[in-house]
Length: 221
Image (cartoon, rainbow, N blue to C red; front, side, top):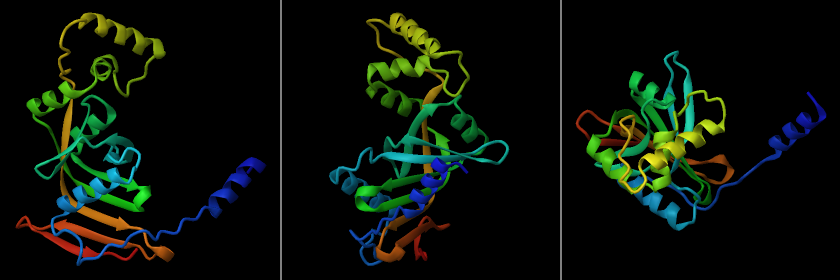
């Protein structure tokens, strides 16, 4: 190990944070985890958490290997968590092969984390159309211009594609690409984590039961 690597390793070992802002109790939590999530999301927004809707989306490859990336939550529709992507991207292909996925939110300002797992499904074309229409024009063009996840020779490929579609749709409404749209994750487990002093964190997990009710359990930190 080089001197620089050794120094970095030492610095990493010294990083410490003690969490003491809030607590999480079975007596105070919403009995419906969707309502509890929306409550925490609102508090994260109000606390000034940067990109509070940023979440780690984890999928599984065809080889059974985990794959993760940051995406943005774009809504909670009838208890399902919505996000959008290119269906031909790596994550799109992985979800087509194995629809189960997990989401992870971390709100540092509030010392909170939420983990959500369940089965995904593609949004209806109408749902995807409605959201696509709200995107900035540049983002709409980008959805056409980028062959997401594919190897390209240079950035010029993207620039040229972008300019092509900008000219093609100049003065026109940009339609949603057929390869681009939304997914909905239908949660089966939702865990709320609240940082506490001395690593004695609060962890409450909601498990969906066969009758549609949610069972709350406390986990050791």
